[in-house]
Image 1: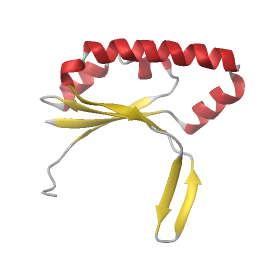
Image 2 (image 1 turned 120 degrees about the vertical axis):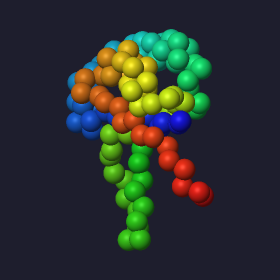
Image 3 (image 1 turned 90 degrees about the horizontal axis):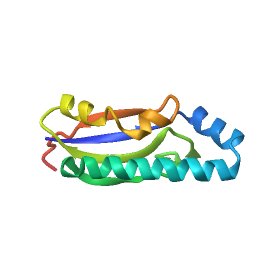
Length: 115
C-alpha cells in the first residue's frame, strides 16, 4: 500500500523563523536539517517509493483567477508500507518533526481511483 506524507510547517512558525533568525544561523540550521534528513532517508530507503521534493511558493488557481498565497506545505514523500501504523512508526524519529517547532506530518493512503 502506498502513502503520501506531507511535511508541514505552520506559516506563522516559518515567518517568525525568517524574521528572527540571522542568515548565517538559517544556513547552519538548514544544513544540519538537510544532513539529518539525508541520514533518515538512507535509514528508510527501502520503504521510500518517491524521495519527494521541497515545495515552494504557492499560486492558487480557481475559476476566478490566480493569487499568490502562503500555505504550510513544506515537502512530500511517497512511502510503501503495510499500514498507516507502520508509516507512523517509521516517522517517529523523522528530523522534520523533531527539529522544527510545531511542524507536523499528514499521512494519507493512496487510493485507486481508476484513472
